[in-house]
Image: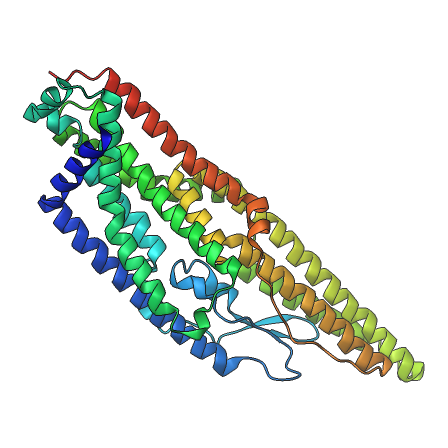
Length: 425
């Protein structure tokens, strides 16, 4: 009995102005997003090819992540070029996006399109599924036949979900096929798993908002009331809660400014240089002078690393608190989950910077041995390995998946319970 009801819902949607608007909007924005982000990736990759280090260059640099076309996240920060010298890591300014509009507005990647546009479209499909039919009198007529309330609600959910996701899936898969023509997007088996998991998160997110829309529709008596409530909830979940909780986290955890850290590093370097000059004794011989300067350089390296470690510890606490508060809205779990799978999340950036610091310490030791002890120093090129999918799950992805699925399940169950008690008269 469910199949004819699902067919009825799909046909009803296909003949509505609402479907035409959402269909055109989904196809246009998804295609536009993929096109814009591909051009941005192409520009950043061209920057990388221009400034990538040659043999013997002490530079930490990694190419742009192909998944940034779908979820850009912090990929531009991860892809920055870091020049390694004897006392510091210098962030080079040669690798920035050519798309200046990204500095004024949120990045229009597929993640943002789904987060904002498809969630709103899901609410528009779900807000009147029950209360509109009650107002028109068709709900009472349907239930007068041999159709249970559970079957009717399930058919509405399935029919509207299919109507929503099929246009999106069509454009998404077509874009992926076109991207496969570019050798830079050649994916390993794990890459295809990541892609499938990202698609699953997209669909689960749409299901979440569709379920929320149907839930409010079963609680409201009028479609207009349902729409107003859902628009408020959408704005709160997508924009208000994530921003307010991030501001609250900043007030709860104090993190020193980057400018202050830079000035402190300069003070440490200046102090040790002046101490080295004051302690300089030409009578100590070449080996003694070299040993003295090596001691000062070690102090600079140790104190700067300790300062960096303290900063990363405090920043990690800020991120942890902010993410915990952000997850009051399931939208945050969706964003964190997709970026984690894509390898453009904040955990990936933190790990990348740790690898740069380790590389700097290897270079520092080699340079000291060469300048102070006359040893030959050879440095391997910097190479960064992204976290595996297993590591991503262990480090928190499983929770974001669970949290999204839990909210979706609760909305579905709550709408079923509310519909069982719904007055169809």
